[in-house]
Image (tube, rainbow, N blue to C red; front, side, top):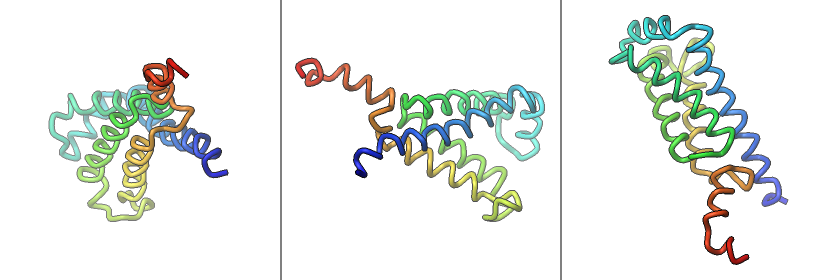
Length: 142
């Protein structure tokens, strides 16, 4: 039963985490705006804020989509986790652990979840898995 549920559970986890990143990245472009995001990044001491803000927003959008689709999972998971590590260092750590006070609790959960999903293999419903099956010589003879 667990083996049958695993692909669906991984799909749900990928979608949930991917949507969170996708929405946050989209907000940096459309709602907050890159200009205000750059100003915020500068205010918290993020180096090269004018480059970092659009890079982070783009990574969150593309990385979120990658998680949802199950594509390039190890790369997407690692890059998103590193982005969250930066958010912890520059924004959330001074506020302590608790999310209610702006702490790093939620961001840490996103980082860990990104890594877990990124290195899970994504399950049978992941694009990575489908592509590997198509390229596999064993799949061609099966």
